[in-house]
Image 1 (tube, one colour):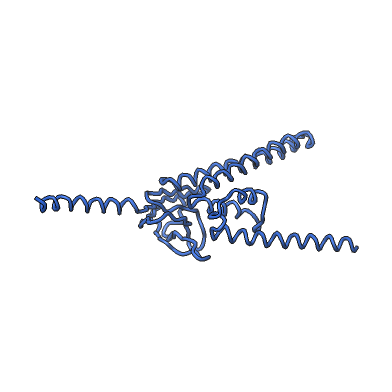
Image 2: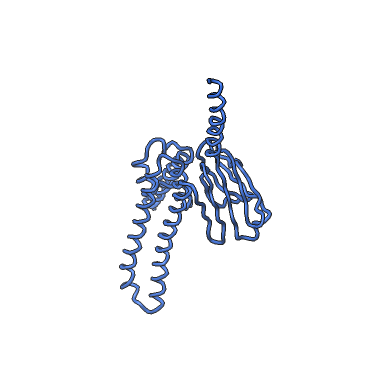
Length: 247
């Protein structure tokens, strides 16, 4: 009787192990409408000790590419063509569908990729609305409107939209302190700066950020450089003031 039970249980145990193994894999399935990508090899690269290390790769054939592997941990990676970074991705258990088209890069299908690209979509919309206000002001001036009459109103609308975008970014980072998105999105925002600086937005984020976020290698490196740059700016400012007094 014991032997019969053991023989009955073994296939079930093996099936459970296989199912567990299958559920911890990532699959990246991509489509590209950019003809020049055909025949090129795309790489998934992860930043390790300051260097971008290849994790996986796949050739684009007739506009399609595929990659798969174990997802023992959730990792933030970047899709590369040669040394050109194309788009960020989260490697997590499940199937990620990547779409590459002129002016559009989207990844969806897993929880964190869905969250990341919804953030990118909404932030892009907010940026476009700010740019549209700038174009609107230029059009109204060309049409003969008095710039003093329209500037104050449009400036207030622009500041309201910038405040909305700033609040959205800070809230998104705060909501994702416990996963790989927060340092990546933080660095994505900071990459728009000409060089690392302790802006009001950065200081607001750091005011409530947990220590684990501040000690992330990417974040820590940015903060160290930003503080050094701020010191240099202050020293240069004091030097110019001193020279102005002497003259």
